[in-house]
Image (cartoon, rainbow, N blue to C red; front, side, top):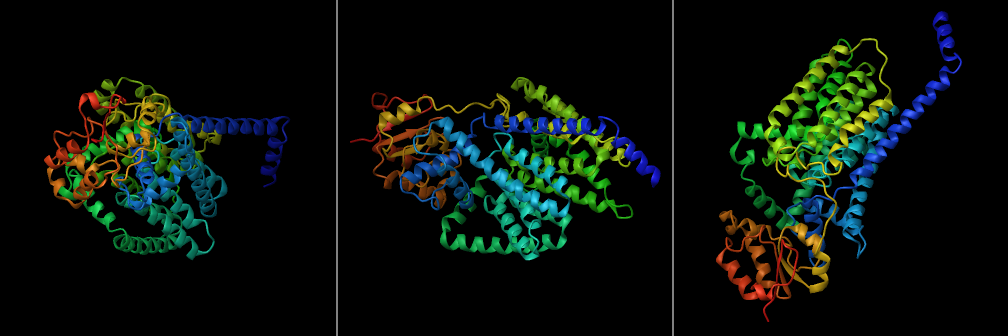
Length: 568
């Protein structure tokens, strides 16, 4: 003991040794913090994706026409609509399009910051302050700089709420309070979108890893609140359950309708490959999970920890598989979980730091290069690229597993933080693609552009009521009020190519807007989205009787629109 103390004293009192190391560590942490700030700033560069502006535009234009957020249809549950209405209310009247996008994005970032603080408070009690801080920071960063097609989507919001559920369940000292708060957050992860139910279960699983009693009671609270919410919604908002049923029938590719098929599993794997290329931190998640499993105390079965890791991976993918469409935002929770697992392994397993650091830098550099390849090349080579990344993930996991317990100087925390930033920020860089090879792969991050809409709004009058036959992002750009609670008439549009939709109550209710809304002075029509020639005879007749869409009568408008005045 004396010798050890003597050696320690000798090392720490060596001239310049201690202060130099402290200065180096401080410089590294400052560099990592600056990199994270730059990454957050870069996330503000792209425009909000069209699905989000669809929701914001529908709520705003219908609200200006007198339709409550409780009654408007934007193909999203009321819990999500309330959140979007809150974010939309932050934008002042008359704000430019760029300012509106920026304020909405910052509103979402503030929500993430609050959730990250709650997660830190929970993990500080269950792990330690250092690990809790790193995991909370990594998770928050992954949410803020998530790919633009993820940000503020219902699946992203559910991932945010699942993170909140973990922190809220663990943070309070009193068990009952943690159960109520954690269960409430988990319930909200279901309320914003029923398909994200697996993310609520995942949150409870992660709580159970650290505290089984809290997880059990939080799960009971979640189930009770879900039942109450369903009963209240069915009683007070009966259209919600009707829309939910009709929406589910629209997704013909969902396994709900045809069971498990290899074709769907293949599309799931392709989607996972795409999200890995956009957020390469996912490629290192298996290695991080391996490091955490290896930390199980000797004598305890590691198969339980391994099973938890496998189940967690299955739950984070279950929502995307269940929806059967495999859009990128259906995978929104995957990078968030990957970042949290990576940070936990880096904080708790010093021997795993070097393999994690090296592999993270490698996959981040590779992804940066591959995301800059032309769309055609990415589409044609996705299989080879995905298999290469999968092989790298397996090799890294094996190396990390075998490296456990070996004496080695761990990589600095600052270096790991820099690598984490590099592996999460790629998708928000200018002109990065929205997907590597899947739907929208040819589209990239762009700045908000509302060319022509200001002039159209001034031409017809900003307060003039209209009827929209357009995707909701057009509503967001134009902003004119509508009295229809279907501001973007999804059911009429789906009825142009899915004939059974015409027999639903949602379609009939949507059709009534064309006859009951007699104050609309213009028809705002997006021909590429809504085909009048394929619509029903009743729709064509009403539109022709009410609006004059002849070439001489049309109002000058952006090229994607036809604006027709009401007949006198």
